[in-house]
Image (cartoon, rainbow over all chains, first blue to last red; front, side, top):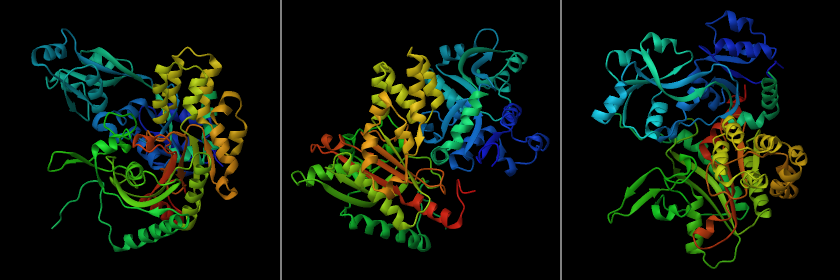
Length: 219
Length: 333
């Protein structure tokens, strides 16, 4: 039996990776290979699989992993209402792990807010984002018409080229926004890393899941 | 020529049909043996009839329970494809059995239609097998339904399954017992229904409750496991779990050993009033089926009777059986 009580854990590569690995090491997992081999995906001997953060809910929902760690931004984006009702992930959200803290913001170019001007003169603002559901829901809830432009790469480019008046994006320190002469107009939601669990594993492996939860809480 | 069919539907060809037929024949035989007569109802119902069950676009709960396909007939009346069989059977009881002495026992094998995100074992056209036991109050009626459920799963040959048993009234009565303000209760329930314990904790933190009550409201819905979970509850929690204890005391030993008591079990469909349950198998990452008591639904159709029922997803059962047979599947690694 491994340090994770035989549970398979989905671990996010990317921004949350190093703190997640530290956390697993704190649980007694041998993370040396996890740290050294960034091409390997499946670490069966320690019950870890690695993937991009937005895939974590997919693997956990299907039961390919019992539990997983991903950002609240990912969970919100995959749970947003509207047509996104269909996308709600059937996973348990068990614990706020506290790290990876960042804020989902609405930002636009410094100076007079071009988004406000577009809304006043044209009745609609254009917003570029990698989080179309979160952006659409926020603008709907605040009663503003918006055209959501989904982009996959650097969102900061979109307002600089005049394609959109504002962006919705995740920021930790604000450095990237500042570098591109963008200022935060609204803070939408604060996001941290979360522990999630498959609904069947949560019942059939209750003791193992609860023990893991207890040890993570104790930090 | 390739002619597409709608997302979430599929053609079932002879190899698959033979396997599905073996399952449905076995289920039908078990239901009939327990005195449940099979019925058919129209796939199309008047929207106004299903709306009596709270099945409307505005009602709370997940998209799963809401009829997702709507058409208009020649006179402009709105028709919907049924999203489950429980509500049509409630209509049948009120309309066709207005004076017959209960209990009434019905079973069905029928397609239902839901606007879900199509994925493994979750089609939009969903074959359900289930029973409804009308006019049998808790706890005896619940015990009978759980007995039929286990008999059905045993007969089709599913081996590793467990039944999660909860009570839809448990958390609401706990909230009432601990003095949670009434306007906050729907938010707490919604967090629980979304399986969001972090959200539940955040909601609880803002309510100004005593620390021990707040901790209890977060801890109780995470309690699940064997009979010791029931035994270890005391005070206001024991009161809220009284219904579950009554059911447990009457269960046949073979059924009882399959049961996981789950104080946080909430079904996404809104009409459940008492005991609720779900079927889990390690070969599948999602519940195979579920059910519960709906003691107030029949009254909305004009014949007030306590009732309980369950539905199994035949496709999910098929996937789980194949997973067990091959020793592979979600949690069978």
